[in-house]
Length: 154
Image (cartoon, rainbow, N blue to C red):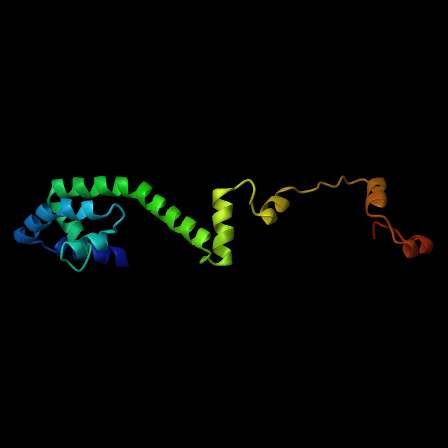
């Protein structure tokens, strides 16, 4: 059986006590207000548990908890992106970022000015017509080849 299938079976066999469920239901709104960018594990630890599976079990058993967590996840994404962007900006301004971070930051903030030129150069292919006169003019023969009467098609 695939590993993920075994994990799902184990999670389905797990139970959550009514006391734990009530504690989560009572304390979850306060924990979610502490920070807008916490992970499921951080939420579980703040609630006094050691793993995020407890939140999965609680949300499976109580639709109100599921609704709270879903709403938090929906609002978490933009807040997380703002926090990451703020951290990057601070590192750039303070001068503590690595060289690759500067490049990555500039390419994401100003994509037209800092695009990867290797990619754009490879996108423009030159099509050479299959014409002997053009090849002779464009590629030509060296002076030594011309003196020896070499054939450019060889």
